Length: 114
Image (tube, rainbow, N blue to C red):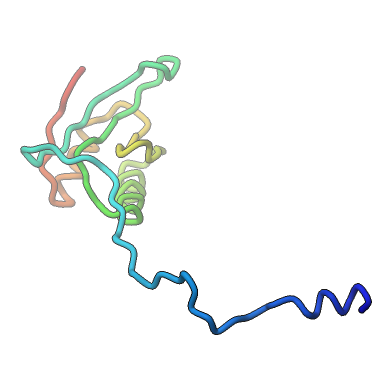
């Protein structure tokens, strides 16, 4: 056989089930909740060259909803931010504004740290 005939003889599709696992995946969640169910807002500047960010901890949601929540908060505050390691970081220094946005979404918030 020539080289192009070898390529045609390779298996492309099989009806054999094999090791296919059809179990639905459990939705993965991001965030760590606190026992009291309160969301904590802390201000951090360490490792950011003096620029302050607000770190939101205590929200537990599935991965895609967690990222959508971060987008909502950023849009309503008019700032940037990121999702990092089970927390949401919002750029800037206005914790009161972030607190009011979260309370309007139905969460109980507490200002923590300096």
